[in-house]
Image 1 (cartoon, rainbow, N blue to C red):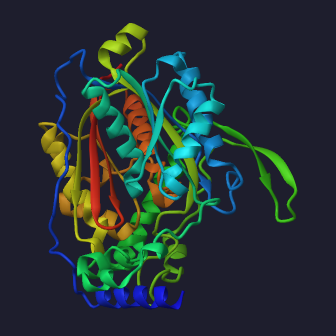
Image 2 (cartoon, rainbow, N blue to C red):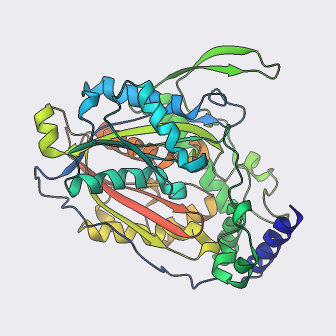
Length: 432
């Protein structure tokens, strides 16, 4: 225990001293092959349904005692019910997860059985940290593209209440301390946020203003019912402090704080270092939730006579310095947009995961994105960030918002990842 703590303190000191493990540029890129955004083809990969649970507050919300496979089953049930698709025809179920043992491989299987899928339908899980839900979608899309199957469900699930494993501890050894890049991979995410803020001069007030806007946008969207089309209410059991169980139904995201003020945010103490600027109010919330997306070829959608919610256009994954991992979206987004044959100006909505206000602000400023295009219904600061679920949740949030606007448009989903990566995908909504 003490040796583990000593190593982490040493890594944090090295990073805070400004010794970046890599230059502040993209290191590697692993984008998938792009898809045409303009043309219509039977081979297009299209989204037929995208639904999610409300996001619950970890440890104290109404989903805190709900098993992760039960949450997954809830959204699988909803997708099947909405589309009336026979579960026997699903080629695969690909689920993103971060904190469960084995990335939740066992629980994705039990969850699908809860929803009545036959044993002939396979399932797998992926862990690309905060991009796991998006990677699950991209993995399923890639398998469709190569002909492995023509229809699948991708999604994400996370219970940060019930799964609190410290997965790093077993991997700590002296070799890591001999490699600066490897050292930086051990940094707590909050320290990387502080690194971004100090390195790129993102002040506390600017971060708090961004957080306030996230809360205000989310509160408006919630009050106007803009989340209703994407959220599946969850009826579950929750235990109080005495252990007594009570049945509850959660239908709205629990993290939205409509009464947030700039003055209130300014009173919060730094969460990670004494003189820092990342706080509980301008960082993403620890959360529970699940999401599921039904995708297929356009030809399969026609065969099933199902309307198309959106088209998958492109996907990109890049590497960035681990000690400033939050800059990932600023490098992944241009890669994905370029692969789509588009420019940033062509994008109507940018859903950028708000891991921390520091990194979200820097990415938006660096790319010159108009602020009104960023997270129009709020982001993870207000809604929460159930790690493995977030990517799939963001797909649902994006496509339903494009549909609500009622005209064709492009959207981007993007996030940073611990150890220094960024991911982004481009989607197109065809219009009513």
